[in-house]
Length: 342
Image 1 (cartoon, rainbow, N blue to C red):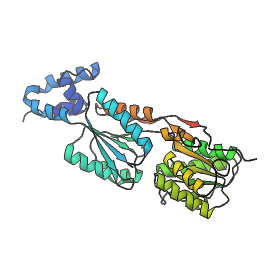
Image 2: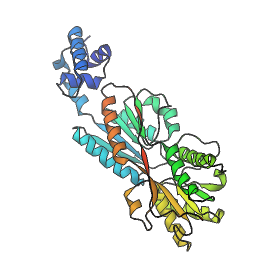
Image 3: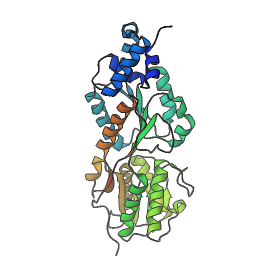
Image 4: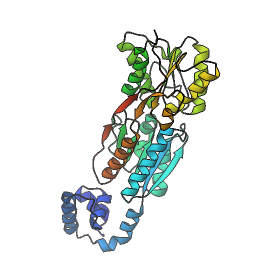
């Protein structure tokens, strides 16, 4: 039986992609890997020319980006930087947009079956979907903006912001300004409960609770939190519900800037003013937040860094490195949407 490139990969301990790059004299391989792979080629008597077609097919495959939530404005900037990063590395990449309620892992399984990508970036994701189905995804992947270190998959890395800490700082900013009746909008209703899970919305809600506890204050998510889609209309509708059920609130924390902007419109449509009557803090630091009237106070995620590290880690992972889980720092940006309560 003829020796294949997979045999070389298995014997040498490196990924097929790394073996392929060595056989094609690519410079993007360490000297250690190159020496080990070439020694294995000689040991097994592998003839690269007999496998030229296989190598060509392998190198012709690209990467995939699965974006969950087409209306998420933060993701737009991250995707643009990801594309630049792949292009600079000479790699091809395809985009796949999903509604925020769709199953991103199922989409990845289908993508692997039909296109056999070298690797996949998940921009946004539901951890429960990964628990149920990710074992069916064979290629290296990176989950972006959501933590994956506790999932334990050897082919799944993650790059994200600390959502608990970021939300705690946002809520703490409102509490330290004297607000005691603070509403929260964002996330699926299934996580806006006392028994919170580990999705992004649940982690941000946990941060809100921690900020209250650190100051000796109580927080009731059943009363103070309203579920909302990550969109302008979602923020608008959620703010209306919050104001109807809690007319005494003096501040709102929105789990995304896009929702905060929708909430700002809802408040103004009620004949109220920001920040004179109700203060608002958002999350993400998208460009539009600096052009609102008033300018939005927000937790700014470093979109450029999230994109760069995600692509770099995925490219390294496809060469046989272990999974990496990285936390990118955030910054609280104080705008004009929060006032101190006497």
